[in-house]
Structure formats: structure tokens, C-alpha cells
Image (cartoon, rainbow, N blue to C red; front, side, top):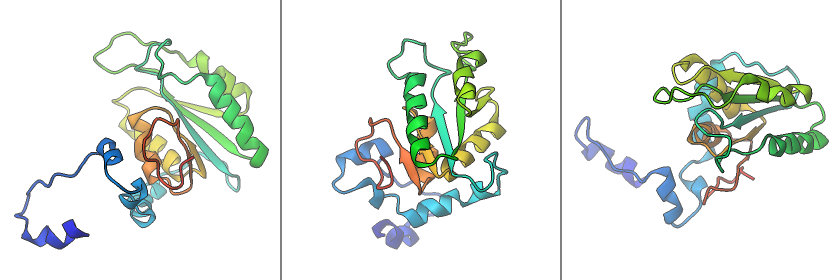
Length: 189
């Protein structure tokens, strides 16, 4: 509010420094004060125009698995078993939940080797989840589709990933986060 009150005194095109999201853990208060629900809902509103792949009239769950840029032995790779366990737990509360998985298997452009392949997601399919694998950073349309689902899902299970952080901020429902965030939002568990 203080910054907004001063905005008319800034010249057109002026840059204003704001602490990054990772620095907010150093600021007193809750992270939710920086992201009030009304702001988050407004920022997520454009995603509502995206066609969603969720089944109608069922609770919706989106999970993001960080894979493409990580070697299999990287500690940031959360095992599939963790996601299977969470899916089972969610289904005890929401038995008809429509669960979708998003992951990338194509590595970043500067790395020629891909560490993952599509068959490594077969366990999710066997458990009745729909799997969506993107084709890398150049696949801009799929990025928006993935973010729309994650931001609008009834439950979003995020990974240890900056990619997942954006839709997690926009999701005003339930976000299950990996626990490595110093100041989660009020709707995060």
C-alpha cells in the first residue's frame, strides 16, 4: 500500500526494487501478506479461459514432478513412491479425485542428454492417473496448460521446483508443498 501511494511520484518506466520471493523469509510476517487471496485470484483469472483436461464434476488434483533437468540420483528428485502415497492419501478423502501428473522429460536446451523417458511414468497410469509430459522449454503452449491446471486444481501437489512455485502462488485452494519453503502461504500444507 505504501508503494502504491508513492507510485504517482515515479517517472514512467522507472524500476522499483522489491525483495524476491526467496528473500521474503527474512521479512517479519507471513508470506500470505505479500500474496492476498484477492490478488492471487485475480492473477489466476486468465487461466480460467484455458480448456482444462480435468473430468467434470469431480475433485481435481494436479501434481508436478520435477524430472527433466535432474539426474536420477539428484536429491531434488522426489521418488515416485512419494507421489503414489500422496495420491492414495488424497483418494481416502476424495475417492473420485481426477489426478493428473505433469512432468518434463526433455532436458534444458544447453544439455543434449535426456535423463528420463516416458515409460518411467507408467506406474502413475497403472494407478489411474493421467500423465502429461511436455516437450521442453520451447513448448510454450503446454507450459500455460500445465500452469492453468496447477493453479486451478482443488489440490496441487508441487515439487521442489521454481516452475511449480508460480502456479502454487496462484492456487487459492489446497497446495501440498515439499517442505523446503521457509514461509508457505496460509493454504499450503
